[in-house]
Length: 215
Picture 1: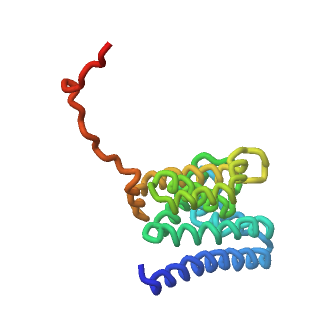
Picture 2: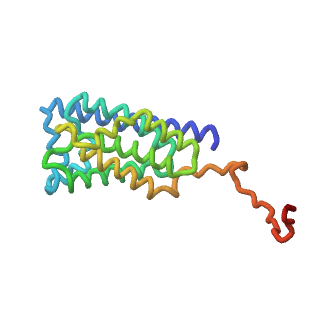
Picture 3: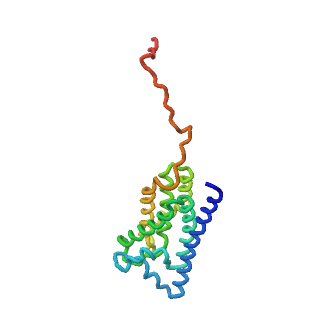
């Protein structure tokens, strides 16, 4: 890939996550200025009205700390996803969004579910498992980096804190695994196998010509 195209891909990989996170901040400020009633646009499981939350859920946050805790992972994981999986990044992102929301709507507790944490878990899961499944050293290193940075995310998959939508985390995580399998043959190419790892056929031995040892 030429330097010009590489620089363009890098710029896009940085700009798109920044614009998305910037939009989240604008929506949060608008919500605060209007009395923080936007949570009603979140997912309320198994209700017709709650279906709209599948679209709105990632845009809504209950507090500034909630928004801030999602912003840094969204920026970093968004960059890694777009840069490393540039040909499938956008379908993966929106399918993570939809599958996570649908899972929460079907199986979540009867409460309003808001926040972009499901996308964070989905991207982290996709990057990790996709890196493991592909014969690509760079992506394997990326998957190990994701584990090193966000290994603590695993605790969010369990119903430990009552005010946290662990269902959103869980279905985002499962969606990432499913999409890493679905897109296993698409995206970055596999690394070529090094010559020293290739098996060379050995010469067959004609055992009829082998003399028995003398006693």
